[in-house]
Image (cartoon, rainbow, N blue to C red; front, side, top):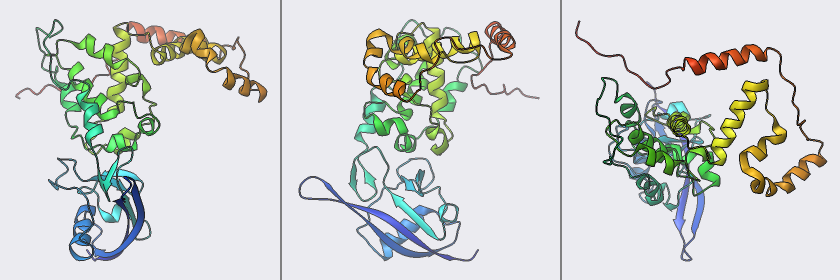
Length: 327
């Protein structure tokens, strides 16, 4: 494979004397084969062109997650990303992860990220809900989410973490699902109750960014949706997010469309709706006032029968591996 010349446009971040951060872009030219990893290219730049360039690395095998940085507009593992796959017209733009404080150049302060992981009590607890019988597929859910290497890619590209620093984040929630789904866990209900509080499972906007950027295919959003389902099944519906989801479910089942006129009230309650009066007035001025009596869509009876059938015969949505038996 022939080498090509690439331009690396790297965001350089330097702490200043006032405790802030000075940022600038610096370009480096490098010759590499398209299959060369971004990490290898960064090492060559540091070794031959600028020894002050700062970034993290460790295993070089997509196991430790240390080298997660923004590459071409997405957070990726530098050791797993090939330059030929992300270069656009020979240009590769690189920066530090989003949603976390920068220490220097591409190195970030990961303490807040791991504090969120610690907040979900990342270990098994004794309690009355521990399973007394474990099936051959009981750990399929656990095994799926334990692929997470805590690289922070999902948190970096999470749109909710961008607007809410209190949001616990997809990685921590996926880790929480790992324990809620573990048959040995004795306090599943307590966990679900905690996760149903503000900034938890119902704060996820389901933008799917965490699914797209996860280098280990953990699909954190799927774990969050499963946590929501388990929470509702436990009767944990006293939150705006749960009420919003149940309102959607009821409206679609009833008429096939949303009753947007009452949706805010059913989601936020009377006091919460009053807080949004200014927005309601603004929408009314623009002529965006939904009807309080939405018409049923064509074929709604068939839709209702589908709901009834699924309620009586729920789909198995859990991750299940085929049982391995000797032939």
